[in-house]
Image 1 (cartoon, one colour):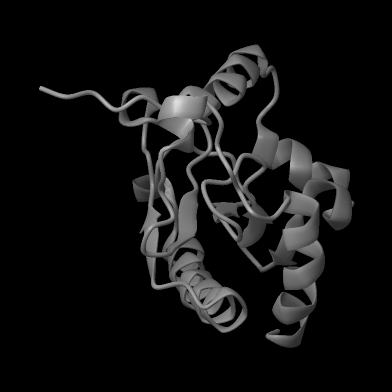
Image 2: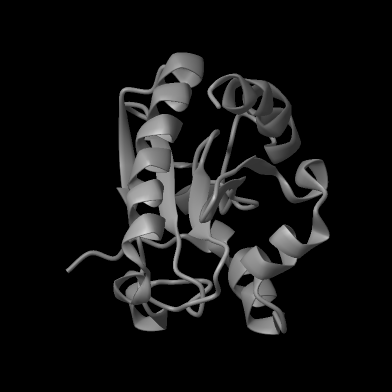
Length: 162
């Protein structure tokens, strides 16, 4: 069996283990969308850029209510999350022109959830060949755009889409 390592995730894992407050609740309570990289606030959910993106435009959709699994959410919240997923893919497709998307949830720590107590949906634009040798050989993840730059480019598009 071959193993593939992801050494660039070390910083994230170390930071996640020190978290005392939920990053999603903390971001919503701060009210400063630019500082927290919140792109859009809906009625039940909000859209936020991932601080440690796999690719440019990697965002997450999370409910305002702190809960650990989607099956506990009411229909209004889950319906809106699906609508925000469609909205996000439309905007990311227009702006970044990716070849595809990964979307999904990691429910529970053993499933890979970095924030296991507040469920959220990842939306990750993907391009053919966007994975390369750098993480394995150079122990470095190359992302061609910083989170602040992604925010500045995307926030006007999410505002227009209201």
